[in-house]
Image (cartoon, rainbow, N blue to C red):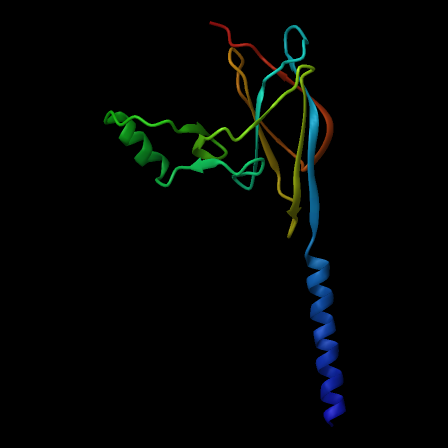
Length: 157
Protein backbone atom coordinates (compact mmCIF):
# COMPACT_ATOMS: atom_id res chain seq x y z
CA UNK A 1 0.00 0.00 0.00
CA UNK A 2 2.82 2.39 0.90
CA UNK A 3 4.51 1.76 -2.48
CA UNK A 4 1.31 2.60 -4.32
CA UNK A 5 0.93 5.88 -2.43
CA UNK A 6 4.59 6.82 -3.12
CA UNK A 7 4.12 5.94 -6.80
CA UNK A 8 1.02 8.17 -7.00
CA UNK A 9 2.78 11.04 -5.17
CA UNK A 10 5.75 10.82 -7.54
CA UNK A 11 3.46 10.84 -10.59
CA UNK A 12 1.54 13.88 -9.28
CA UNK A 13 4.80 15.71 -8.52
CA UNK A 14 6.15 14.88 -11.99
CA UNK A 15 2.92 16.10 -13.56
CA UNK A 16 3.08 19.47 -11.76
CA UNK A 17 6.77 19.81 -12.62
CA UNK A 18 6.01 19.32 -16.32
CA UNK A 19 3.09 21.79 -16.15
CA UNK A 20 5.32 24.44 -14.54
CA UNK A 21 8.08 23.93 -17.12
CA UNK A 22 5.65 24.13 -20.02
CA UNK A 23 3.84 27.21 -18.68
CA UNK A 24 6.99 29.22 -17.92
CA UNK A 25 8.28 30.80 -21.06
CA UNK A 26 10.84 33.54 -21.65
CA UNK A 27 11.91 35.54 -24.64
CA UNK A 28 14.97 37.66 -25.35
CA UNK A 29 14.10 41.32 -25.84
CA UNK A 30 15.95 42.78 -28.82
CA UNK A 31 14.90 45.70 -30.99
CA UNK A 32 17.12 47.38 -33.56
CA UNK A 33 16.66 49.69 -36.48
CA UNK A 34 17.08 53.16 -37.93
CA UNK A 35 15.24 56.45 -37.51
CA UNK A 36 14.87 58.86 -40.43
CA UNK A 37 13.37 62.27 -41.18
CA UNK A 38 9.99 61.55 -42.80
CA UNK A 39 10.35 64.30 -45.42
CA UNK A 40 14.04 64.19 -46.34
CA UNK A 41 14.76 60.51 -45.52
CA UNK A 42 17.98 61.68 -43.80
CA UNK A 43 19.08 59.57 -40.77
CA UNK A 44 18.32 61.29 -37.45
CA UNK A 45 21.09 61.46 -34.84
CA UNK A 46 20.25 61.92 -31.15
CA UNK A 47 16.65 60.68 -31.18
CA UNK A 48 15.75 59.73 -27.61
CA UNK A 49 14.22 56.26 -27.46
CA UNK A 50 12.52 54.99 -24.34
CA UNK A 51 11.37 51.40 -24.17
CA UNK A 52 8.36 50.56 -22.01
CA UNK A 53 7.45 47.00 -21.19
CA UNK A 54 4.30 46.41 -19.13
CA UNK A 55 4.40 50.13 -18.24
CA UNK A 56 7.98 49.94 -16.96
CA UNK A 57 11.10 51.38 -18.53
CA UNK A 58 13.26 48.38 -19.35
CA UNK A 59 16.32 50.24 -20.60
CA UNK A 60 17.34 51.86 -17.31
CA UNK A 61 14.22 51.54 -15.12
CA UNK A 62 14.17 55.25 -14.42
CA UNK A 63 10.63 56.19 -15.38
CA UNK A 64 8.74 57.57 -12.45
CA UNK A 65 5.02 57.05 -12.74
CA UNK A 66 2.53 59.37 -11.11
CA UNK A 67 1.13 58.15 -7.80
CA UNK A 68 -2.19 59.98 -8.18
CA UNK A 69 -4.86 59.48 -10.80
CA UNK A 70 -5.19 61.51 -13.99
CA UNK A 71 -8.04 63.75 -12.79
CA UNK A 72 -6.21 64.67 -9.57
CA UNK A 73 -3.10 65.64 -11.57
CA UNK A 74 -5.20 67.79 -13.93
CA UNK A 75 -6.93 69.49 -10.98
CA UNK A 76 -3.57 70.30 -9.37
CA UNK A 77 -2.37 71.84 -12.64
CA UNK A 78 -5.56 73.90 -12.94
CA UNK A 79 -4.90 75.21 -9.42
CA UNK A 80 -1.43 76.41 -10.45
CA UNK A 81 0.66 73.53 -9.10
CA UNK A 82 3.54 72.99 -11.51
CA UNK A 83 5.09 69.59 -12.19
CA UNK A 84 7.29 67.97 -14.77
CA UNK A 85 5.10 64.98 -15.58
CA UNK A 86 4.55 64.03 -19.21
CA UNK A 87 1.39 62.33 -20.42
CA UNK A 88 0.84 59.44 -22.81
CA UNK A 89 -2.51 57.68 -23.31
CA UNK A 90 -0.94 54.23 -23.05
CA UNK A 91 0.96 54.80 -19.78
CA UNK A 92 -0.61 57.88 -18.12
CA UNK A 93 1.48 60.55 -16.38
CA UNK A 94 5.20 59.84 -16.02
CA UNK A 95 8.56 61.55 -15.59
CA UNK A 96 11.70 60.71 -17.50
CA UNK A 97 14.99 60.76 -15.62
CA UNK A 98 17.45 60.28 -18.49
CA UNK A 99 15.93 56.89 -19.10
CA UNK A 100 16.57 56.61 -22.79
CA UNK A 101 19.07 55.63 -25.38
CA UNK A 102 19.86 57.83 -28.38
CA UNK A 103 20.32 57.04 -32.03
CA UNK A 104 23.83 57.10 -33.50
CA UNK A 105 24.99 59.39 -36.31
CA UNK A 106 23.66 56.98 -38.93
CA UNK A 107 20.25 56.97 -37.19
CA UNK A 108 20.72 53.44 -35.88
CA UNK A 109 19.75 52.09 -32.47
CA UNK A 110 20.04 48.74 -30.75
CA UNK A 111 18.13 47.81 -27.59
CA UNK A 112 18.91 44.61 -25.73
CA UNK A 113 16.60 44.41 -22.74
CA UNK A 114 17.49 40.92 -21.56
CA UNK A 115 15.03 38.13 -20.92
CA UNK A 116 11.33 38.86 -20.38
CA UNK A 117 8.65 36.54 -19.09
CA UNK A 118 6.05 35.42 -21.60
CA UNK A 119 3.37 33.82 -19.45
CA UNK A 120 0.66 33.61 -20.62
CA UNK A 121 1.82 35.62 -23.66
CA UNK A 122 4.87 37.69 -24.54
CA UNK A 123 4.25 41.35 -23.63
CA UNK A 124 3.86 44.08 -26.22
CA UNK A 125 6.64 46.68 -26.27
CA UNK A 126 6.15 50.46 -26.46
CA UNK A 127 8.90 52.58 -27.99
CA UNK A 128 8.66 56.31 -27.34
CA UNK A 129 10.77 58.32 -29.79
CA UNK A 130 11.39 62.04 -29.24
CA UNK A 131 13.60 64.69 -30.82
CA UNK A 132 13.40 68.49 -30.78
CA UNK A 133 11.49 69.91 -33.77
CA UNK A 134 9.93 66.51 -34.49
CA UNK A 135 6.62 64.98 -33.45
CA UNK A 136 7.10 62.40 -30.71
CA UNK A 137 6.00 58.93 -31.68
CA UNK A 138 4.76 56.03 -29.57
CA UNK A 139 5.10 52.69 -31.33
CA UNK A 140 3.71 49.40 -30.06
CA UNK A 141 5.55 46.36 -31.35
CA UNK A 142 6.65 42.83 -30.57
CA UNK A 143 9.64 42.04 -28.38
CA UNK A 144 12.09 40.95 -31.08
CA UNK A 145 12.32 43.26 -34.08
CA UNK A 146 15.43 43.36 -36.24
CA UNK A 147 16.30 46.32 -38.45
CA UNK A 148 13.02 48.20 -38.27
CA UNK A 149 12.69 51.56 -40.02
CA UNK A 150 10.96 54.47 -38.27
CA UNK A 151 10.21 57.89 -39.74
CA UNK A 152 9.65 60.99 -37.58
CA UNK A 153 7.67 63.93 -38.95
CA UNK A 154 8.80 67.50 -38.38
CA UNK A 155 6.58 69.83 -36.38
CA UNK A 156 5.17 72.57 -38.55
CA UNK A 157 4.53 75.94 -36.93
